[in-house]
Length: 276
Length: 180
Image (cartoon, rainbow over all chains, first blue to last red; front, side, top):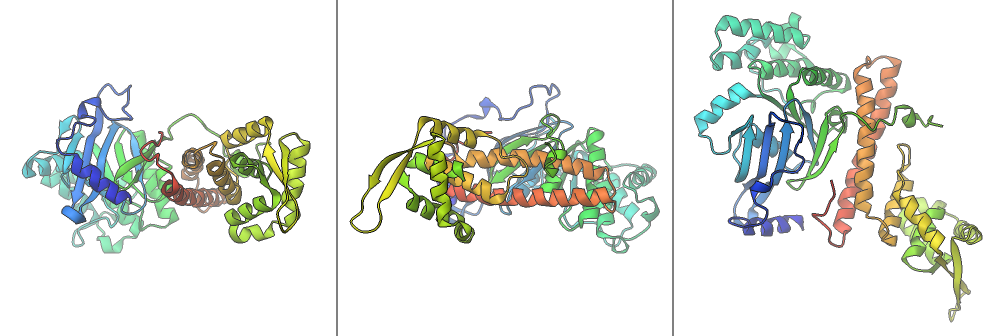
């Protein structure tokens, strides 16, 4: 039902006059003078053609202020991973605008986009994507070297980051010699090595048990305290609950936007039924 | 129970037998625990409290006479207040489920709005539980309790997701009117 609805809306959109981009996205941060770290306006991504067209992302307006931790949740196939890829310049929208740190990225050339991704975006994936034949330290150094850092600088930065994620003693280990949680922490260190404007994580705890998940969440909490802008796509409500803000997606559109930062505390006691 | 019965009467004046059938349909196998007398006792109590009145007595060609009840203004108010009030973090599944059914039947509240409000509320509770969990060792006693609480809230949130899907599929129109 919804799919048909989307297709109809989609067909009528090109050149359509409804709600121009000038109106500005909903959920805009009035206090954010520096402008959002991420912004999308009417962002859409269509896969397939004609009858098999699917609006994976369908007119998403989103502002993520610098320093915010945002969780994107929703059932599988709702478009949340596609949205993340569009935000990080891994994929191009069919329609609409994507902005990163005040720069419009949706129509950048492939090389400019690759350069921008290296410099400004840190990616963390569910299956960590580490290079199997490189040690933990080398995996972390690699993006720094690719971005033009001197080998010595890269080494120093990697050592500091591995220390920060609690893996100093594992720097020379290969990924295969690390646990799932440790591998994911290496991946996070790698994502941070170029001091990115934003860190984008796609189901970062999807393969981890409770204890390892909490380790990753503690690390995210530290990043958040350090002012790192972070977007986490997750189907795990317990992961989403640690963010400042949770948006939920349904059929490619934003279906809800909840702020969890500050205020409205009910007290844990109410969960026990001891509130009297 | 009183609130649910009242809400069903807001939709249309009805008799005990019909109300019981409607509740049994909403509750499925859980409704088997609902004994016949409960609905009638509830109706009598509601009448005493001035929340419903006997509107008429239907005399079918066959079968027993049936007292048809309708809500009073006070009854209407009470249902509206019940639908508007927060469910609280410990409300059980059946109770909230009946509230959604009652909201839809009475037309006094949008079930999707109730689902959204509850999702926010549970998400905030889960945020608190998770922030506390991050400050505790998983293997500690406190950590274990917090994990249990978080898993319960997560289960509730997943069920709400299902509620959202089902009730939005049933919504007459109204899509795209979801309020932030």
